[in-house]
Image (cartoon, rainbow, N blue to C red; front, side):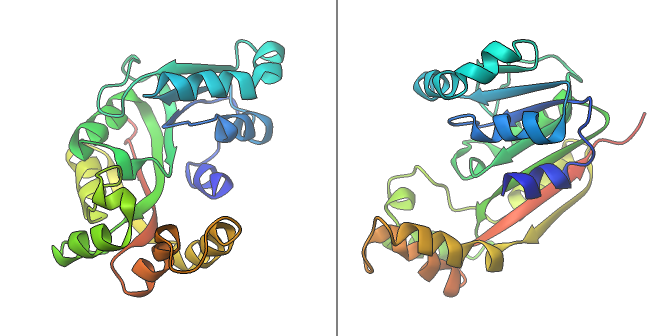
Amino acid sequence: MYRQVLGAAGPLDGRRIVEVGCGLGVGCALALREYRPERVTGMDIHPQQLDRARRTNAELLEASPSALRFVRGAAEEMPFGDGEFDCVYSVEAAQHFDDMTAFGREAARLLRPGGRVAVASFFTPDDDPEHGARLASYLETFADGLDVARPVTVLTDALTRAGLTDARAVSIGPDVWHGWDRWLADQWKPGTWPRNFLKAYEQRHLDYYLVTAGRPQD
C-alpha cells in the first residue's frame, strides 16, 4: 500500500515529504529507504504513537538524523510552514480526520508548486445516508465514531476547493479487501466485527480508494 501511494505521488528523489497519521513510522522508513527523499517527516496526533515510532526507527533516526523526524500535529492544523513539502501523503488515517475541508486546506498550504497529495483510505462510495447506519451496525469503529462514514467525494471536493487540481479517486478495493480479510482471519473468527469490513465492501457500503491531487506550478 505504501509503495502504491508513494508511487502515485510522483518522483520523490531529493524531495521533502510528510506522512499525515504516521503511526509506527513504518511507511516513513520505507519511503526513506526506497524513494531517496531529502527528508521524511512523520506526523501523528497521538504522542504515544510518536514514542513508538521513535523506538521502532531508533537505528534509522541515529543513522540519518537530518533525513527523518517525527512531529506531533493534527491533520486539520499541521505545525509546518507554507510550501514546506513536495508531497503530502497519508495511508489509512483519513477515515479518522475530523474535518476534511481543513485537511484539504492544510495539504494545499504545505505543498510547493508542482507538489502532490496522495491519500489511501476507506470511504463510502456515494452520499447515501444508509451507508452510515449499515456501517455502524456492522463495525464497532464506525459505531463508536473512531471511523467516520463519508463519501470519497468529500475529500476530492475539499482538495479542489483548496486550489489543488486534477483531484481524482480510484477504487483499489478489489486489491485490498480480500487480502485484508485473510490477514484478519489470523486473529478474528468469522462473524466477529472486524471480519465485517469485507461484508461492508461486498454490500457496497464501503470501498477503499487512492485519492490524488496536485498543486499547479506557479
